[in-house]
Length: 134
Image (cartoon, rainbow, N blue to C red; front, side):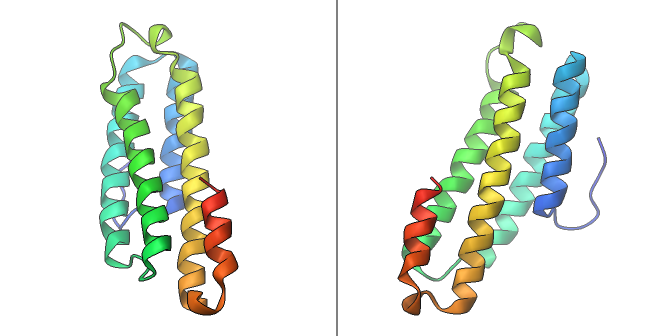
């Protein structure tokens, strides 16, 4: 597990997710657990920092927050869910789900934060597009 000396970016999170998937493919339960812990810690830091810059538009902010909560639950389910070993938890599939969810959330936040800067009151179609990414 590599320590990040700055606030974790979406790219940092995706790199960790790649290591999670690699550990699942290798069947290395210790590495999988270590990388999942690192991902959860980095994700928590990332989400905490983003909440400070949350979109001021209530609808968009709610969509972003729901996506963040769903992503955290997915990681928690893989990290803390019941399993008897790497093979028993279908970890490769779940690790891929985490990677896909991270990519989706990064795209959602990119749209949300970009839309915020463009003034959502003049671009209601952005809220509609954000709702479609759920």
